[in-house]
Length: 412
Image 1: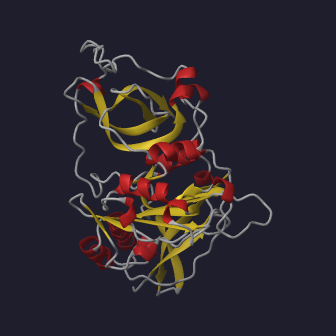
Image 2 (image 1 turned 60 degrees about the horizontal axis):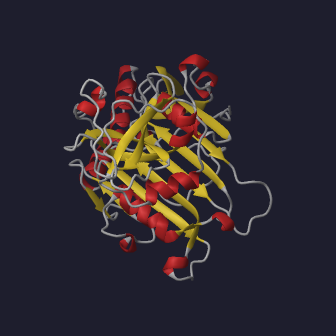
Image 3 (image 1 turned 90 degrees about the horizontal axis):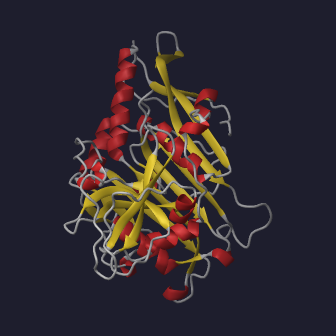
């Protein structure tokens, strides 16, 4: 029997619904503005920032802990909660690594009674210490977090707008739901192969998988000054085609601003350098930068293997009707291995549009930017798993361009 690989698309209503939770088990908090979060993210970090407390949102096992920071020298408090890994300091206080600023306000968490400060050591700006006893210090603060077992991108912890490469569909749903974007959609597909004996497509048993989850707030109706000067936000996540064990392998995040709310190009570039490194200062960033994360964890820049186009470029502010073909089903394992060896285990790109491109660098205003992350390592994982399922079902690993059918994805 000879066969090829294809996909049978279509909507699975159950997949489009977020996980159900009881109100008592889920903690929520209204979000602060995007600009507040961006301002904190692009601000200069300080080794003097320490944890003064934490709050938790969501429902186990998908709940998230957000830390509130204070400068131990000046007493200045960071306004938004921060995701990260707790790290003990020699002075008895706790710092963070792998930080990601959220949209949740520490002041709101404290007002709602969610902020936990017991057990965290904070030295007053005057130098007078106010230590807690060892029994009061949370276990996470008392010792470094245990090392994670080795996995494809364990050391990178790459996240785009709070969505991390490697997340499960349920984890992505929780993040997107917390952002309260106005529209939400999911698309599912089914692994299948072309049976040459019958000439028809044969679905793989239990081959249904989540392909793309997206959420967005579209631009308001009405004419815009130009196509890249309107407000809105879109997040699109593609998963590996491994039914029941899908992992995020591609993330596309686009944000649009009206001219009145545009952000400065210099501030955006400073934030990119701080988050992804690779450049000593923002002035070194090219117009369309690319970061490549190596298996060692090191970050290098540029795109000599020409893989930027996989997800890069300015993305739309709406994901309606734009479901993508799953990349793990379009490339061979050999191609992914080449990308990993010559490009990296993950590739990050950024593109933006300046409304006044002819202005001086310090005066340029950004009205649209898109940041993406793509992992060839997860693509390889998905390609190999899909091939194995095809083999087990009686097909071969030869890929075909057979047509796929789709139903419109549903919205919440």
